Length: 504
Image (cartoon, one colour):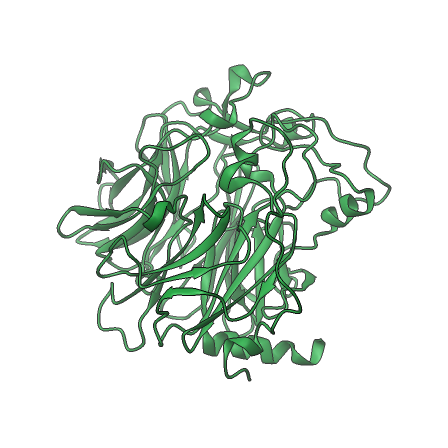
């Protein structure tokens, strides 16, 4: 097994290209600045570090970026959610860092590589599709939502198709992954890990049908599944779990496959579809009983921190946005890139488990997104939540700071990047070795350096959030602004790499 990170990512044979960003001369926000495509796969050894990488931080941060390989067919309608997946691995050990990026070689990407141009149209705002070659997939799997280790594979997820399995060392694409035949069409890009068993908890959303899954951590086989109907094709991206429940929100944000098939905008805001407004749907994880709880109003959740049961209540923490998608009455002129995401705010929702009554309250007035916790507290009471802020954005950015909210003290701490760094990615919490408390660990996030147009990995102390991080790891390329990722501890990573050794 590898003794240091350089056996995971070997020394490169030359300098990594700088300035490998595409320039397609468009005002679309999602094709410029930190979102702009990066055209090269890169690897690098013994990266430059300002500060010091903690000695107990050993493993890999995996992230997947949204990175269109070819100029979109309709650059004015291109949306950030539609970029091709490129996986980034930052490998840390013994105070050193190494780096590798690779495209996720989906079957639909191979079709476009063969053609030398984009063929598939956008599914968010619509567009014109090219002629599909015989045998080509009818829809594109962009494999760009999330990346994490499971079953000794690095799995890369997309809400509209099966995950793809990658070698966690080389990042070579091995093919689609179906949990040993247990999942047939797709699964969500979000999953949770049961802290008691280590099992993977996830779901699939196809039209109005939600299917719940539990995959065994030892065999990777599906041990539990249950399907139920929510009545409308909600854009169901994230969910939450407590000890007893899987929690889903029914909102006016919809994903309309019928419109996508017509090359029209498929992400639609339709308030008329919900007579009573937003509802919470609870599925008992043990009995599969379904209950509905009305919240009212017309808004959408974006991502959840966590959920737990306490004193007869179910408590759910997450972020809430006023609109998500193009209004159903203006699909011929969908929402443009600079107005797509109204600011989201942290909220807390409560369900009285005796009466079924649901309520909500705003937790913080700090706009933000990509909420995270210490994942060891999944389904259990948590004190701290972390997120990136979206307070006062420039035209070319999505995020502008890193935040920590203390639910006990009802206070939020915000730090900005040093030396003008901006657009931080979703923070990932990594516990210290022999951690003694919930916040005893590190926050890892990628930031954009405008001056160099490259990315940096910042390591912050999660318990003492300061503008100057513990370490700044200088990456040799820009990782286009993406969505989600995860940390793999060195022992889990080493085992997965060793398992792949015979297949290389």
